[in-house]
Image (tube, rainbow, N blue to C red; front, top):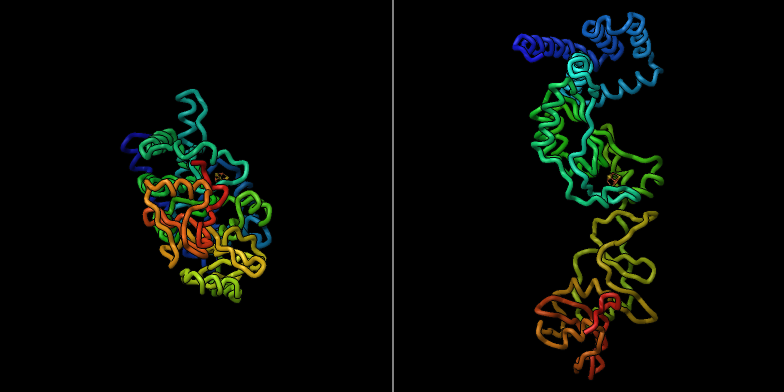
Length: 391
Ligand code: SF4
């Protein structure tokens, strides 16, 4: 297949098939049935006696039956796929892989006296941006990657053997999306099927994928929303699905702000502690400050809803460590030098001598470390017990 005559024949065949596919796709919008019959006729011209006449007739029958699952699937693909992607897929998968590639593979099997697969699967990386329960990807770490040059070699050598379909798995292949776009551009006569958790697909990436036309995504979902999310994390199922049609996206009502408890208001009055922009939410006794735009979270399992401010306890407010870390300054604060032995005492959980009264912010070299509470002679330590370390 490597002579210049072969190359010319190849180019002419691909161009001729491209024209036929264009005509078929131009009818697709109005008449799916006609399009399917035309595509089966095109297949017959190319594959000829590779299949019996009966097979072609049966294919036409199934593909023009409005109740057949294949018709429904193909109609859905024709309606929803960008014409350039549909055309490139038809040429790469139908012509290069099924027709020309299969012939080359059969010849090479005889020539090299070994099996040659019809598709090649490789993992561009073992890294993944998710941590699903029971998956090895998290344990293998993020260091095992194929370089672009290695991936290019796999595809280049695969094409010489007749392989024109490549499945990419991982890890999460789209961790390497820049290199994959480069690969798909360089080998634009090859079809790539990428198995992905879908979370790294965004609009700019899709635009490039549509432009190339030879990448298809296989989105991973495991069962129902609850079984999927139990393994992959809350919200993954919803994140994979995408709205179709022209209807406006659903807008969730905003989460109503909670009333500021008097204990929190009193704490702020005494300390002058600043707050970021946002609205107040309460989960039981615990108060959080969340973005104004946060939609309703009712019914969702929320792990962290914004900045934890603290808890309302029997007529008093206990400020959270997170709020201390967010604060840059407070009217009552103690600033310790790195070399000050009091710093080590604070980090170990010990009391500090001080004439301050009430809630005080402890800082080291300008960085907020945590809370302490003074009684006029010493500061009681409120550094979290789990973070304390012995002097
Ligand atoms: S998305 Fe896939 S590769 Fe990543 S952790 Fe989950 S199962 Fe593993």
